[in-house]
Image (cartoon, rainbow, N blue to C red; front, side, top):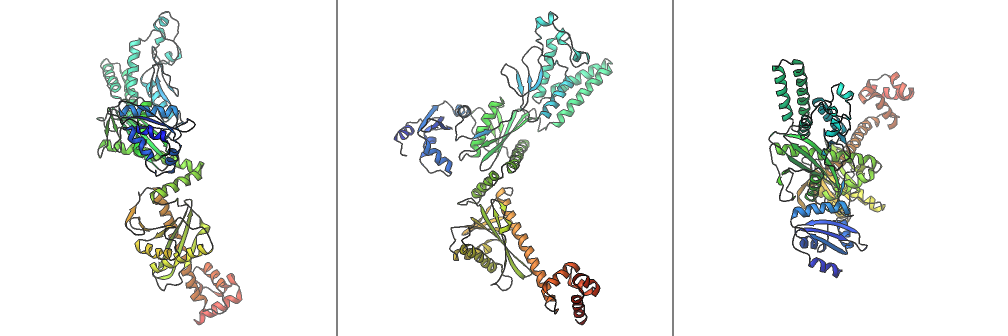
Length: 597
């Protein structure tokens, strides 16, 4: 470190928890971070070379450090979150969430109105949500309207206004949607009971409302008021029907928040499920743009703090896929099986689907960025020194030892580049010897590229295990390309990836995009090779017949085989049928030849 002031600042940092801020020479904030131990954490930035270029660039730009000491780690988490939001430093992760979702509001006023809104006003009103679709909001509001007649007007229903007779009932009262509190036909106490019941429904607790309605229905039936009892029964059915549509986890699981994360090279996707009284009452997914080499643990911790603050979550327990540090007051559960594990799996599925949706949109809107992301992911997964922008894959095809051929397919930026595909007829190998064929083909391919000064690939994939890989390596060594190009073998059975000199294969996640690209290359090489092999066999079968007919060339014979589909059918055809295809004189030569033979 060349900056003595910075060195001095680091040496004098405290050993306790806190938040640190990095500034550049213009005094602009670069990064905000939290630490259990400020001195250790900040020192770690300056005493090593980092894995990513971005972190190394950040470190070079730092000219000043500020820090805030806090009593506990929880305080550090909350302070870091607030500072990131207010200061928006360049190198901190970006919480991507520009959508404004609808909430359901219980307005703080006498005879509370209940309605949907996208604006949160801090006037003491209660807000439930956000809901990710307006359809859900309208369904809930319809349910509430069906169960509890409430006012929809915006009158100020203060006691003095009602008593002075300032308002008159409207159409809503006459059609039974409101009980007329504006004229004092419904007491505040009675109205408040309905609001309390609605609040419980919005929290996911349907039990109390159900109990009240069932009691009311029974009382009405005993009093022989069957029409009213029937109306209440219909309300119970509406409530039961709505509740069954909510995902019931387990009635014993109450007031728990579930968080999960799925990530790639550039972003993390965090899903959050809120469980109340055994039902999922909220699901929400957010994208976090990575700026440095953040781990899944760091991203998830940041998201949990942000979401708990945003949605005012007060649950004492959270379910997560791995241990996280989110303060001493919250119980962190990492379930291995049972209902809690199932709900965690559901959250992970939500995060995965959200990621796939975002990637599909990205592919359509910005295909270059999509390719860049896949290339970065492949470089990381396959431990490559550079991104594999140009990949070549080889496959041998010999069926029952005849006509050995090989294929080389080329992918550029993760997509097939068909104009660069090449077929090879094996020249120096007698009989079906896959290993020797691979050595020959790889040598011929890269000798030619070197001679013609064409660009070489960053990655070569050999369809086959260790034997095929060793055979290809012979040619790579002979051409002096070892170390300049990465070469790996893929074994068919378990999708094992073999590296030169490493006896232990690499296994990729079966769902990873890297493995999908490799499988696509391998399948494409196989298809391309087999097609060529079939063409070659057909030609050699034709040639055996063609050569023996005087005056009939290869082109004519091909035309006939295309028409008659086989040599056997051609032999059985009449002179007239043949002459319709190739003319009388040639047809006579063929029929005369087949009569003799």
